[in-house]
Length: 261
Image (cartoon, rainbow, N blue to C red; front, side, top):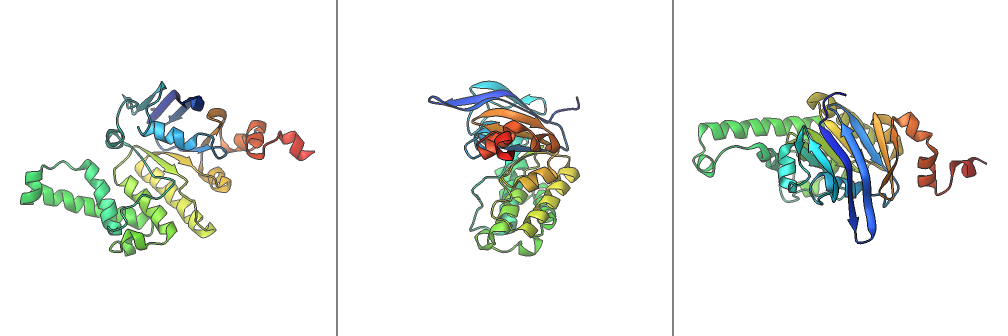
């Protein structure tokens, strides 16, 4: 097996008597686009919260590029190289599009408050590098011409893309996207799919994607894990998942044979 960027093994969490996620295993090498799907309430966002430190797993382990991260708080996990977007957009609405991305770049900043106040040479060079990286990411997602616009004024689809730009600005090894295509029209979804493929290849990331648009998932994901009531019911390439009876039953509420007869 090639090097794994994300290696989550048998992770789980229980809330009261509810087993929200049980025995989930995800293994992502560099350059993979992996889908995490399932009906509403299947445990997908809970899984993201476990991976990113919002919840600490009660069982199992999470390793990011050979380093254990399951006991770390969210900001340390982000700095280690695992970053996410959210199902509900969480931009800094009063800041410009550019400043939303530049703010995330500071996750990798290395200068002291004194260098910042004095605007030393290394500080200025670092700020210029952050500006270039931010504009580069905005260009990839077709947002560079909106760099000076306040984030709150962007159309919904552009806000979605901006949130992905901001996550990429942290220079992640693994990027988690929580329903990035929600609310987008077909043209916007095609553009988003192309951008995700581009950034995955350009930066050699592992991308883990939650998405309800099955057309998008089947089109861009190389491997898919299916959850139902917190349990993995199927895992494999898209062609395998499409024809799995357990997956059909989870989504349709009845065995596939009952649907086709």
